[in-house]
Length: 51
Image (cartoon, rainbow, N blue to C red; front, side, top):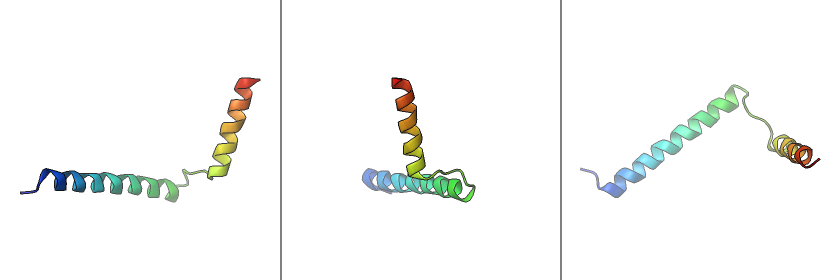
């Protein structure tokens, strides 16, 4: 039988692997944007709200 702490550690590892697999799928299918472009878009949106 697993101790509760060990179960929690394994559960967290599985959740992280699921997130990484999803992110890898995003990259493979081209559903990502360079960070610089994203931040530029956010800056532009904020400037438009202030205008």
